[in-house]
Amino acid sequence: MVDIPASRRDLMKGIGLGTGMLASGSLAEGAVGKVKEQMEQAEAKASESVAADPTDIPEPIDRFEPKTHEVELVCEEVTAEIESGVTFNYMTFGGEVPGPMIRVREGDTIDLTIRNPDRNNKPHNVDFHACYGTGGGAEATTIAPGEVERLRFKAMYPGSFIYHCAVATMDFHISSGMFGMILVEPREGLPEVDHEFYLGQHEVYTDKDKGKEGHHGFDFEAMKAEEPTYVLLNGEEYAYTADNKGPLKVETGDTARVFLVTGGPNVTSNFHPIGNVWSKSWAEGAIESEPEINVQTKPVAPGSCFIGEMEFPVPETVKLVDHALSRVVHKGMMAEIKAEGEPDREIFDPNPDESNGGGGDGGEGGY
Image 1 (cartoon, rainbow, N blue to C red):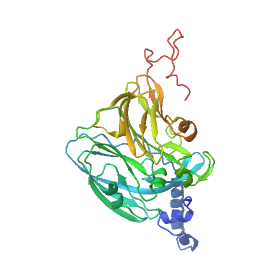
Image 2 (tube, one colour; image 1 turned 180 degrees about the vertical axis):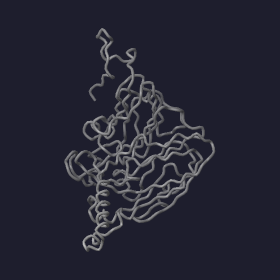
Image 3 (tube, one colour; image 1 turned 30 degrees about the vertical axis):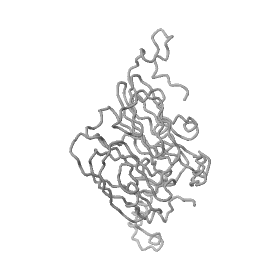
Image 4 (cartoon, one colour; image 1 turned 45 degrees about the vertical axis):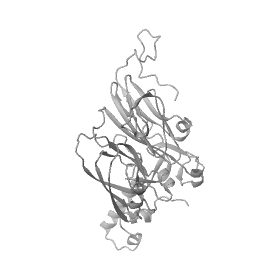
């Protein structure tokens, strides 16, 4: 079973028209032009990046009374570049990997609408690890293309939790990008930090060697053998690094909270900030637990989450990696946080033998 990229016919269907309407000449010239424009826009969208912006996070919650949130998840099957010159058919919530972060307070109610547009080819659903109920809501939300379903549940326990597609071929859907995070803040909220970043790790199994130009189909045998072609943060090779969309930005003296959701479906992340530590760390996203202090590398299993905080006393580029380092070197797994500001040579001096005390922006080494 191999997926193919969206065809011209699929694009026409996606904008509500049939290819025969153009062939028959039944549209006025202006309408034909509009259809062509819509097709070009659809084709452009089909090649856009799926990498979610790590700063696109709902604001921290500063209320104490419960609230009902109307949440909509749209299942989007899209074709995009996994690296330059290589395309892949993703399955997503909202057209991005990971799916949107949902942020609520303990005791809040989620009134969910899930949509599976008729331009899609597959059934989908959603399993919330933050939900008491059969399959985390998966059974109640299973929908074919063209269908809509609703689900309501109360967020009873705080923490950060994965949500993911859970149809029969769930490993295929999750590997293709269909996962995200719901953050349930405790009633008292979270401590204030200067920045928050949201990342999702998953692995992708393709039928061509990594980097081979062209369209890559899905390799089910490689998935069963747990031999991924790519291991990624936010669905794209090195998406948030200096060589791609650019690093995330902070200033010296700032603090940052990083949320990681590991979709998997098979590979455990060994999450490590090169040049830094997790000054506070909550395993499994269990935010009401006492944090571990100054943790270097934290395992984050598939189907789980992590919350970690960092400090930035000196200018540097922190590389967020899976410390199974072949995944960094050969499979595309890295993001960067660039801290800018004045050096503090009492803490870090890359040139101690120079009479002026040295300089530089952090003396990054050989990763």
